Amino acid sequence: MAEAVLSLGGNLGDVRATLLRALEMLCEDGTVTLVARSSDYATPPWGDTDQPAFVNLCAIVATTLAPHDLLRRARAVETALGRDRAHERRWGPRPVDIDIITYRDPEDADAPGEVALDTPDLALPHPRAAERAFVLVPLAEIAPDLSLGGTAVRDLVARLDTRDITRLSTK
Image 1 (cartoon, rainbow, N blue to C red):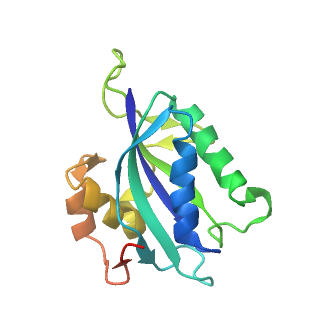
Image 2: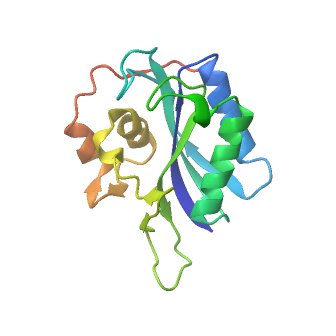
């Protein structure tokens, strides 16, 4: 079984409930199983800053899905929860966003470990994850020793300004 790191976020509606529902929907049929989940974090908008703050979290999942199948599953969940990629602005407001940060397949005899992909719809590991505190801070909570690009998540977090990221209390 493969293991993937997912980053989930949103800033429209009851985001925390939407993110919880997104995790539930991802795991509904047993092809994705939640292994670990970070706390929710309030984070400033990134890219397009003229919008409400986001809520972000990271999750580690075990999956029998191949990377592109996991991406299709994530996109289907986003759509079911109200995301309309065709009509939103880049880096703009959204009810939910699910990104695959890393994908590791220890059972792949040809390439055990982290999968590297660069296709038009999916790049692995996520090419900008190491620059994004809204990914790294939640991920450091559940996997501080995980390596992204050869550097531990805890060390990547130490390089970033994280003052605007706030861990939210549990509901």
